[in-house]
Amino acid sequence: MKARSARAPESRLALAALLGSGIVWGMIWIPLKFFAERGLTGQVLGLTAFALVGLAALPLVWRERAEWRGEWRLLLLIGLFFGWANIAFTTALMTGSVVRGMLLFYLLPAWGALGGLLFLHERLSLRRLLAVALSLGGVAVIMGGAEIFRQAPSVADGMALSAGFCYTAASIVNRKARRIPLISRTMMSFIGCGVVSAATVAFATPDLPQIAGATWGLLLLFACVWLLGGTLLTTYGVTHIEASRAAVLQVVELLVAVISALAVGGETVGLKEGVGAAMIVTATLLEAFNSENQGAAHG
Image (cartoon, rainbow, N blue to C red; front, top):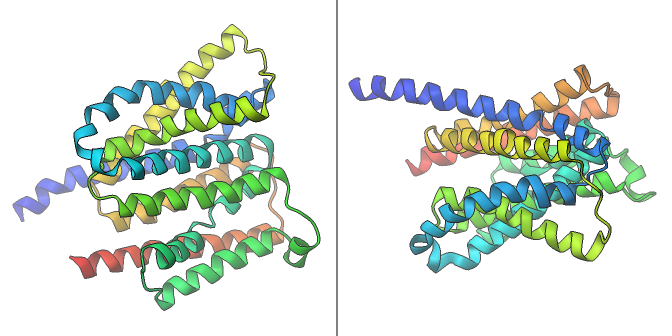
């Protein structure tokens, strides 16, 4: 009883940290739209704000090299997958609808279940199959049903879908890695973001926009407060709370983004978006509860 009560305050603090990170990441569209209005793109933002966090993280990752040296290829894949996921997700929110982008990104239950089956040889329970069906069905509804086959998705739609795919790929690599510390895994996403941004800017964006001095200051503030602060909240939360509870709280980010975009972003949700959103949220919760059952079985 004493041990349980001693862990309770820490658990509550971790829960508050995860809720806080859900709010931070769910409302990240606000500064992203702000920077988009000033002519910045997702690639440029990755090359500045995200890369600044990556540069600050390099000493931390290098300090842990003795632990991840044997799995450096996996760490590299984590950085590249997370790097593209961040750039694509940022671009989707900066150029398209926040609600639509978030919902398309949250095809995670389908990608996670199928990726686990193919690469980690995990079994698909009935609950996970239902989650896959709901998430795929939700995206099909949002995209307009049969219209998917008649017209290509927009750039923002494609970016949101690819972001979810690469985020899941990075998560699968994370589960395969055994010796890479959490700090290196987390911070490598920002390093990878800087590398991917530099590559895309070099090959696809020859003319960079002029960034005013005041905007540079805001980019620095965004990197140090919003990005780094949200990352620290997430890292503390996931290391001090059960994985199943952390997975359930993933949906907080989606709900915060949708509600805030509707309340202050001037966006609207039609019938198909509402039905699709309900299906995707249900799929996400089913996947989270599946993680809970797996954790109980392993325990």
